[in-house]
Length: 298
Image 1 (tube, rainbow, N blue to C red):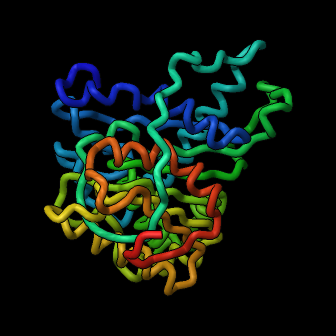
Image 2 (cartoon, rainbow, N blue to C red):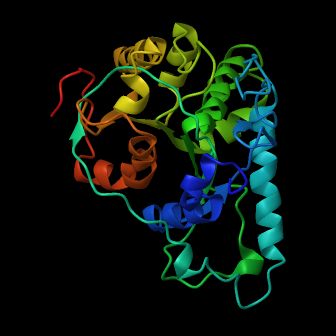
């Protein structure tokens, strides 16, 4: 990030700072941040480890790319490595790595369009553990049976989108795959945070079959968007796709909560985009039952 003349402005959003931010947002969970398998031109994150992608990180979704299996193995591997940690536990990130928090802003209601140049903080999963005040017995810690929450920000949302293809593939074409089904059932929530990529379509999943399958699963869906993405007139498909995604899930009676961050008249800057990552949990905690899908600001 520091090596790029433009992206260096946003170095405070590096993986270490994002990890600390998420730790504060989810104090009772282990935070696992998954790096993209490659970064092209010092700018484009490519999550080939979850979904086939071109050099701009644009996904080429397939019914299965073993993304679920890959994620399950990552969590298992981390759990095994934690067991090897001797006392005392690994040090936490230094206080100076705490990112500056942008000013809080209003939370309003849905829709619009755009795509993101900054996709450094990608998808991540976090496995629930005991409250932070309880001592952790590292040698007995097991993540293999834990509940999982998946969070994708910006380009990282392509990983969550690929998961929807694999949920559908597993549920409809390989229902006898009990191992995959058990892992799917461990996922309790998914967060889409201002998703975007450089392609001209498929920023959000709109296939009815995939969304209907998602709605049948026992998980909660959180959608956080900003005018930077969904109200960008130069990329109108993002707003249309996101509206279809959220509306169809609501139609299928999925547990979906949608939040629009910022005001449409505010400058559609990259800072607005990152503010979604900075503030999504605080905004959500203020209004946990928000399910509005209109375009009117609140």
